[in-house]
Image 1: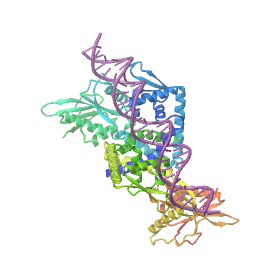
Image 2: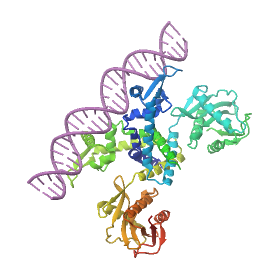
Image 3: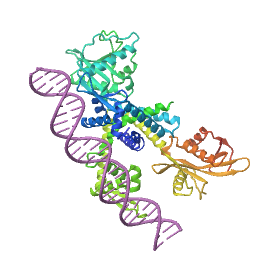
Image 4: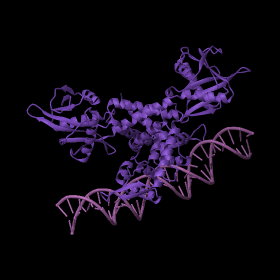
Length: 290
Length: 290
DNA sequence: ACCATTGCCTGACTAAGGTCAGACAGGTGA
DNA sequence: TCACCTGTCTGACCTTAGTCAGGCAATGGT
């Protein structure tokens, strides 16, 4: 298909959106707060948030956010306190009044959304919901950022922990990572700062005949599957391996991870015999790098 | 399904949208024009537009729009001239420089859209395009306005003409409306001011046994089909008929209009025998009103 | 103990977006 | 012809949103 169709659709949708759904934003208005401040209340949420995160999520200048926070404080809607772990960082929380306002904001937002879709039949509402969920997942997936991180750093550790936790969940007899040895390099995919996928490389052979990297601890957050994140990560790791002068990539996997297996096959990996003694591995794949 | 899921999805999408796609808007920036002015250039378009329409479409205060137009004029991007038909109204047109700018705006917007979806595979791009097109159609359909209009007025005439034109196109031997007699009442569905569907009622029987209204000249714009506009219009006309104390509704149709026939059956209409001598009618339906 | 860095805050400033009241020209019906 | 309406324009005014440079306190490495 032509990318022209895609951009046309995107732009057409953009127009419909700003005219029709965009007014949802304005539901935040009319409760005495300007839009920016209301959005901030929304973003702080019932459980509070770090100032740093707020800045990232709202994409605001540090000075401006600070001013908005002071504004909320002067209205007794929020308060900030230093983070005990690092007293330079600050954490914002809503006061009772702030939480009450948040609730009213949510109610209004819901009402407006409901009114918007009220003329639709149930069947159409289902179609709309499904279409929006699909679009949401894909757009979010498209804007995921792949980043090489320190294989022993916090970002790598956090995503590997989630990977191990899932294996423990899915394997019939559980999973024991032991003390995982650090990999040569590690890539984490993040969306809004939280890791949603990861994977690393380890050199397992380097002699006259071949230089082989093994892909290890590759994982995609369950709620992000079906958006092509896995293939994208795989391609990325292949690029990294190539830049490390690897001539082939291998990986092993367990028979329970059926989506992963399908993806490896789609991506040009072919089944080979066992090449290690990993007790959890049942299937072994290899791909020759061009 | 619960409407809660729908509003959740809508709100979640809303968030993703403002963070990710919303920046498309900013593609209008950086060409020396503030966003509002750039949007106005976009809305005037290559073929110009009435100031009145611009105000409606952009939802702006008359004074503010006027100021924006003066701004564009002072930059030699647009010019306004009185409408010859009513010299109070004014019509805005882009100058050559304005059209050149419009083109650059469109290019930038396209480029940004492309960059946004670049990480997606072709298959995902197809899915995204389809999802957005569906969402677009449904959201636009949900915000269509049904309005009773003068059966002989311009709005009614315009949509009936399009209906007749389509019949002429679809019937193997063409269609001749003759001099259509005005109906008792007529409803037009509009989106952004242009008619997208219509239908009227005519009392065809009123005696001791029954008061019967006939639905005539019901039509949905081809590009708007599949969004439930037909059923909504049908329900609306039934309400109108009820308010006119009708006890039953009849309608006739041609065998070629298969989507319409399916819709009538879904909506509780049952086949009856011929009740008029309309030469184009082949099928006849009736529904008893509660 | 020192220094660079990080995280947040403040003051000063600007652009953008928008409202409101009134003015004024053109049009319309009695 | 007059009174009133419609559509647009102008001046005065205001809020919101945001940038930038510099400041201070807490932290981490040496």
